Image (tube, rainbow, N blue to C red; front, side):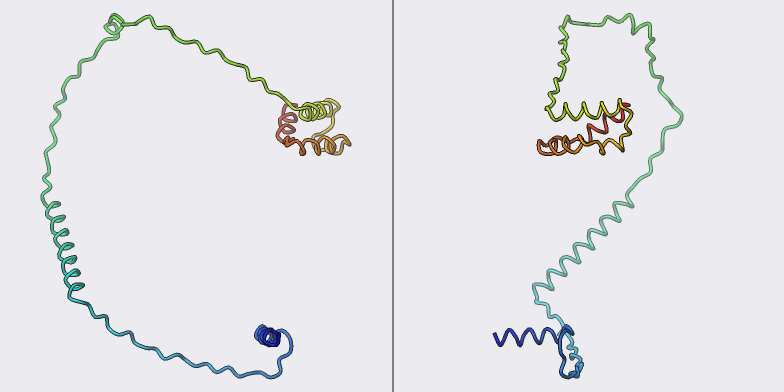
Length: 170
């Protein structure tokens, strides 16, 4: 406990909280700057560096010789081969091979959207309020709104998208 109390007192002094009996002078001592000893390379490292330098120099020489070897080729003059043009008449007279293949007919299935009782009731309330001429911003003041909203939230039904959809249709 004594150590904890002493530590807390010291922290309070450092942070400037609590009593400070005397100001202690802080002396700034510069740390001596030591020069790093020169790196001594082993023979293997020196050989590896020499090989890498030699390799990179050879690569640069190869690249420059490849660039110098590029030969410009003269482009052909205005000689244009005539491209045979097929008349539309020939295309229409060409026999088109069509096998009698049955084309499958896809029947569109109507999606049956099942609505929960809360959603049906919510839609009915909003529609009723719209027909009564209530502005969308004033619909939330209706006493039935809070009850339906709470029940919708309890069942996980999102009322906002449906509200926007119904009020946008007016």
